[in-house]
Image (tube, rainbow, N blue to C red):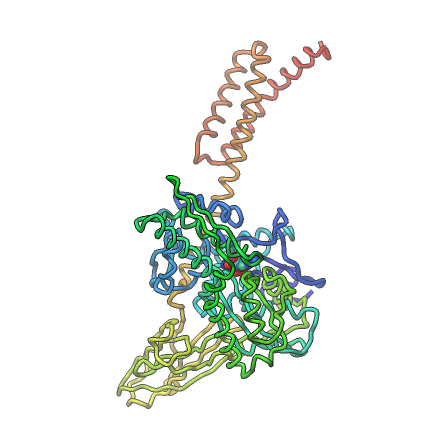
Length: 615
Ligand code: AMP
């Protein structure tokens, strides 16, 4: 048995693809990776959660939630991944298209408002992760506590941290965060182990990224990565919805407004139309608007191509950036591996094929490849698969603010992780005893164009003339791409107590609270479940007792009858009490059952007599 940090190799580590649209869980043992299916044999859990109308509890996760999203638009949450770790300003354009309510929370974070109950996107994602965890636990018939979770390569620090937090809220220790394209490359290379340069082109529902990797004797090195956290199939769905709404208004009047349920119906409809046009040349659209108004039109594949062309071009621009960073030309790429549901679109395959001048590799199922790769990474960590070694890269440069709002980059993008780099700075003012350190992420030169990840103060520097203090700032990015920053003034050895909490992430306290709440809810949920079972059993038993009393009531003595009535009415009170204590309920039910054993015997004896089997 191989001992691992925090566990042993016989403890399963699962691989999770937490997607914008769909999520999957996979496991890899010595025989290879497999996706763990649900009881219905379905590998996919739609990333969708439905809450009850009061917003107090979640009612359904996955397919059930997605299939009824149109009926419950305001309390069904999908695409939570798009909101994770993001500020409200960054997502304000798309909020209009979401049928549920998104509001601003602490640090201007995007939060979800279900009838006044506020959820963070991390909590919603945690429900999806819990569903996958339960699925894996049913498969192994034992608890699962550890997971590798994939994220788009372009996810910044706050979004990665948010993913970790979601895992923790779901009761999972996220042992590694892996970039989705890297996971895909792991799955792709599994049985070939051939030295080559590959591009992984991943176009899903909400995000796009492309990574260039070199595979060399079992070592995967990510050379570069580029993409867009806000580019995916959802954009096409939205463009089709806009087209439908525009044409409906043109035909039936500008004043028409579309309530959330209609918008949700349009969205589902638009997606189905888009998928149909991947196979067919045309698709019919028909929308009944009431009062005999019907909107009808045929959407041709050629029209959809016009809508999609600029969108596909944007992905090619990212491919060019990734190649430039890797110092390669399209012809240097041996294979283009296609990942994500939107790579089924013929136009995407055609444009990508033309750009790389190579037939895109579509043999892997684009829906499951990332989860399978995540499970391969999990197997590497668990010591099951020692063949492959993964070298990932930092997707965006990291640095600190210097005078005049400029950014000094300390770790440049596409540096292999884990990475450590340090820079020395000094003070600008005589006698300066404090230095404020603002940590930024991004490629631009000025802070206003980059993203502020966090700030901290190095205090207690002894007063010295400007320029004399030597402040050393060290950036450390761990294997998960998570950043820690430390600062030391070398002359005085003053060190700051530093915690970089991403501005759009959750504080440790918030995550702790949510984790506790999720445990508390788990207990509530179990109690509720037990009460439902007890109520059902009690109703059955009372029905049985009243049948027996009908049959042999005249043989029952008055004091025994009174005792039965008391026990039944106690149980009846528990049935009617929504807040009943399940243990007391159980006790009352057992008492009633005990008391009525004699009644049951009398009833059986009477039946046997009636049948002539006894006297
Ligand atoms: P993913 O995030 O990888 O699960 O991809 C989901 C996206 O793929 C959604 O936008 C789907 O509408 C889209 N998708 C799935 N199958 C097809 C298809 N056959 N044609 C076009 N888009 C598809």
